Amino acid sequence: MTTVGRTSDNGISFPDDSNVSRYHAEIESREDEYWIKDLGSSNGTSVGGASVDGEMLLKDGDEIVLGGSSRISIEIQKEESNAPASSLPTAVDNNESEPLAEDQTESAETIEEQKPSSRNKLLAAGAGIGLIAILAVGGIAFYATRGSSCPATAVIDSIEAGETIVGEKSIDVTINDDTDEGCVAGAILYVDAKQIMATKDIPVVFKLNSNDIPEYADGLPHSLNVVLFNEEGELISATKSTEVAFETRQVAKPEDKKSDVAENQKDNDKTAPVEKELSLIDISNMSKDLLKQFSGNKAYNLTDQQFLKEVRKKTADYAANGYYERAAKYRDVINIAFVRENNLDASFGFILAMSRSKFTPTNQGGDEGLWRMNPAFAQANSYNGLCGTETLSDPSQNCAARAAALYLKNMVYGVFDGDMIYTAAAFGKSPADASIWRSALPANHTNVWTSIKTAQERDNMINFFAAGIVTENPQKFGLKDKPLSELYRLTL
Image 1 (spheres, rainbow, N blue to C red):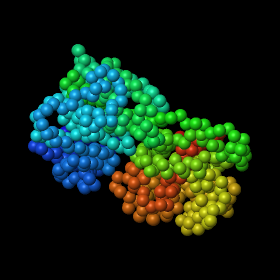
Image 2 (image 1 turned 45 degrees about the vertical axis):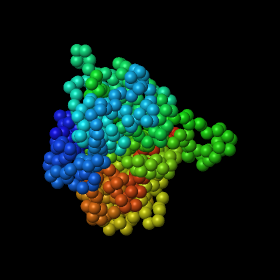
Image 3 (image 1 turned 30 degrees about the vertical axis):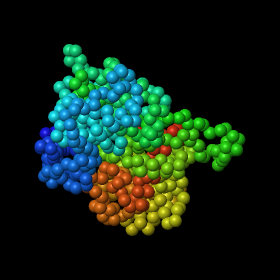
Image 4 (image 1 turned 135 degrees about the vertical axis):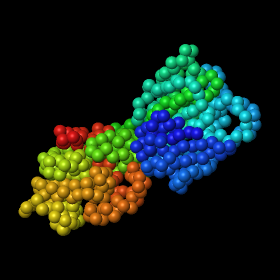
């Protein structure tokens, strides 16, 4: 029996996923079969898209989804003979840390003791003693191991989350082994659950060269793990997954041609070129940092590759110098209307204005002001009740800020339970229409990309994130402006 849940005393634990219950489910071996049972979890368990009501038989290739967000991929392999399984690859036997040959990654990555055959074994990605599950959430792999009495643990010291590895990089592993003689015999390095290297050298240092694994140089986040094993070949424990990107070649800087310089200096240097396109892991990390500016402590999955690609593409619309100077003109009216009068985050007002008008309050169609609101809509719902004789297009933007803040307050607290991201996506809807749209969202909508299906709402959300990460990270986009948060830093 293997328990699955959020707390660390489970056989497989997902401590960072609040959608997973403390004791969410259990997987039980019965003869040659494996069964999963939901333990009355709050957000449910599904296998292959089907909800687990009571118990369900697991099949080879099944994907278990816990709480709508955490996933376990299942592989069931049948042992055909009593012959001992493969030991460590040749690279390990020679005490060298080298990449595995192509044919080794499939046949020699399993490290296990000799056992009677004729039994099915539950595995994930071909690795394991007893049970090893790989949790893949947006490209992050996590290993939970059972079957060894060795208490050793390991930590990767030399890699930071979000780092891009170019050329050779030393992967230093610190092992915490309190046993008298030490029970760790070696370690295996995985990238996205695929074994790349193995070694019996202690201390453990892997020399990983990104040029040896060009298939991972795609700008996407990949999970890096190290798994320890003992003298019997049992897998002991794994390090926490670290998201990294790989680059297999130096990116050439554009030639400094006069014609190019002249082109880049057009329009008074309002647009600055970016020499190298940011990776998706950069976009993901900047998006996560952006969320820290908003109250409510809402959880979102921002690792969907299509979402990140769309945000990265949209950043080009906002990567132009001058936004800070334009926004500074309206600092006081935004801070007063959003924070003092309506108890909203100042960041919400600024970033939403950037996403909709880039702080250029010209009329667009029938919409006016920094937030591009429709005057008839504002009038019909009394959002402009404090405007007096001013209009949404008044140069001071006093009326526009008050009307937008009042409207958004009704949306944030009256419809979306404090969720500003989904409020930004629904901008333009009446609270009644927004309530209908919200009711159509899945119960667990932490993944904003898969939850939002409608084109306009997706576009609003993509614009919001793109505007936010550009204005908070101007230097990464080749801009000379200050971060937008400098205008509301004291209100955070």
